[in-house]
Image (tube, rainbow, N blue to C red):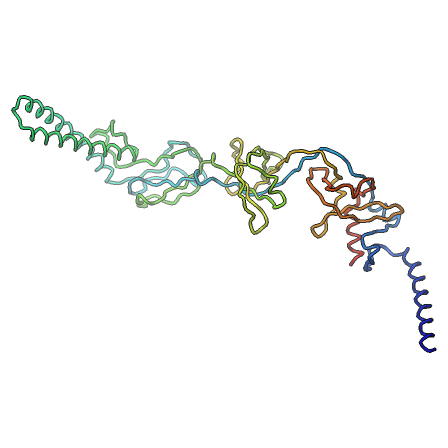
Length: 383
């Protein structure tokens, strides 16, 4: 009998609390820290005042042609084949340096002057050998004539021929050495022997590094300058894992830097590295369609890739909200009630987002303006 009285009292108390809870439910806002039950954890009820504050508008699923716009970012780099280290063929002292870091130069421009006595010796050896070769030529011709009339032995003629051939090979070797260090052997004579040689630019470009100074002695293996040929500028772009299959070699893209985001240049994807890095991205290499002095080595750049358009179903971008790596829309149920529905999205452009398997939201009123506010209210209500 004692337990029966307790049970009747408990039921009466429960009924009383339920009645009070029902009266207070209308006064609560979604901002209260109240745990959801399974029935209402994806639903939000707004007061008239809240609806006016949020400015709720609705839309519905729409058919349209859409292009996926993939945004990439990365840095401008120079292809290794277009970065040159310049050295002197022969050692010597740096007499002068005619460029500074970052300066532009033209092909054939003198970058530096190197001085050393060995340059004099090389020119002297060439002129001496040239004179000896002429004497050897005359002697060889004379011995041939004498040998024809048997006035000279075959051995003497052969020795003269060997001397001539040896000196001729030596002269050609010295001539090539002079050519390599920038001295024209054909125009060399005793009156224009010089102790200095010029270091010429092999192409037009920019100076990246200067590794020597005036008066320094350099060896043939020492690098004097690092030069950049801007025609080898490449764009190293990061592709997010979700977009890897959409970016292909040969695609045309638009690139721009953060300083001038409104000025976009065309480029083309020339390579895609077939691997995903630890950060969840792959690398694409692009090349500018034409030269642009605004892009320099090391500069951060952005790119846009338009994927082929297709006819599909979608919603305005602001109608789709994301939370914890999932996507949702809100259905207007009427009477100020809104329900959150999970969706799978596809491609997106500046205005619309594709909804995959759109039958789940077909013929439903979907919240457009205010969807994000509803998400925040629902999140706060669940805490």
